Length: 307
Image 1: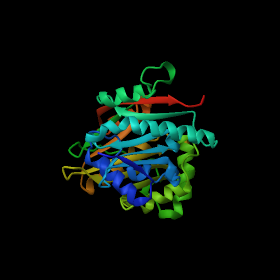
Image 2: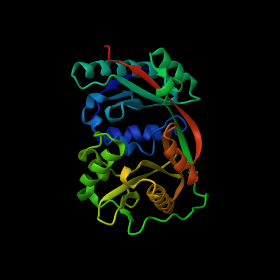
Image 3: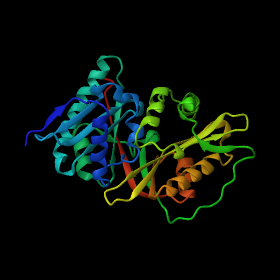
Image 4: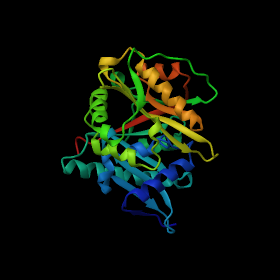
């Protein structure tokens, strides 16, 4: 069967990309949070997106060079895994191309579930190496799940702190400043964050901020919702953060718990979250409110700086 690669054409393709990932939830790390990731400025350049279609125009695989995350997001129909080497060849070409423009990155990362041995072998054959045991810079991740049946504990905010929904696009600038401070990165932009508010999947009621008495934003937690192949509503947390000036006050646990409550009220059967193994505080927080690890995620890296 002939397989063709075609150009990315915008939001209609994003919907098809999301549908392909959602159709095979056991194969893909990013499903419910794709509206957040696919709003990033990486997709402003259509050359950062690869789409592979069959003769009937059905999407079989896709990949995105997610520059803000230094990560290759991808999904592939399980009957078309033979396309993965072709996808990784495209990744190589695009990575080198970006270096030549001065906008490239010295390395790229790809995520894979630890039990996806065929994908792991293909990544290794393409020159990617696992980062799970490389000394001080070792990196691996976990996917966690929380059932709606797990009871909630009550957590109290400091006096006069409040949790509420983000106040629309008028508060996006303040959110972006907080996000940048929390993650010590300028990758988040006003345009990216504003786009998330315009996504059809966006639910304002689960886009939360914690506010200090003088009106400043101290923390944030965004929830996402989607339906899986069994017809169940699934939630996901992405992202969550608290400003360094307000940590150790219980704000993270309080805003996370409130977001979970709201997701469950909207019918979530269970809620997912992904985090790094080395982020002990984040992992402990999620476990403390009832999340449990369901999948180990390996991180693979390929260097391009010497190209």
